[in-house]
Amino acid sequence: QSALTQPRSVSGSPGQSVTISCTGTSSDVGGFNYVSWYQQHPGKVPKLMIFDVSKRPSGVPDRFSGSKSGNTASLTISGLQAEDEADYYCSSYAGDQGVFGGGTKLTVL
Amino acid sequence: QVQLVESGGGLVKPGGSLRLSCAASGFTFSNYYMSWIRQAPGKGLEWLSYISSGSTYMNNADSLRGRFTISRDNAKNSLYLQMNNLRAEDTAIYYCASGRYYLDYWGQGTLVTVSS
Image (cartoon, rainbow over the protein chains, first blue to last red):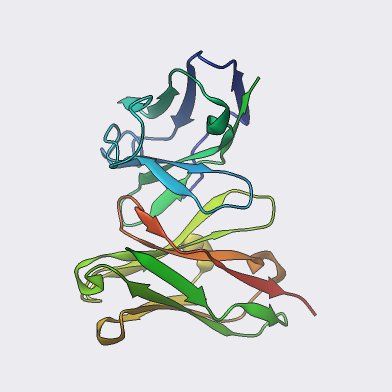
């Protein structure tokens, strides 16, 4: 199972919106509504931010939103804040296996 | 609150074996799928394996080629990962997490270093 494709880095200024893409195939992202997103600060444990494409766990700010079109999922962070600077990973169910993206480093300028 | 605590990591020689454990508390462990994920130093996340609540269903990443085996003991609220024929590229932090389609709770991880 090949890793999902994410941009290596994105950046934005405080208050702006950024979108991180996650491209897979019809065997993973496009085939199931089981895309999730994780935030990882340096040296910390990954934290679930979005599940089932667009659902937010309790406690995650509504500035974080997820969507999917075809084989590409997206995470949008609006009203960017300094504490959003982190690595973000997408993941998808891939028919009996899981697969992660390579990760995207978000820099808040 | 939900707590997952991994143990069993350490330094092992190439070709050696290790058994990782994950102790769960704060939720009904026996009701949940559980997964193992790893992260090599400075690299991204890699899904390894998951197991159903009653151990009737489990699966590994193809890349592991059968070297790793996931198991659980619901009576002990514990998850395990038996790792055999370890290679240098298996050096990573190993996390246990609850869930299958998404991973909602994660442990702090245990470091496995494979080196001669």
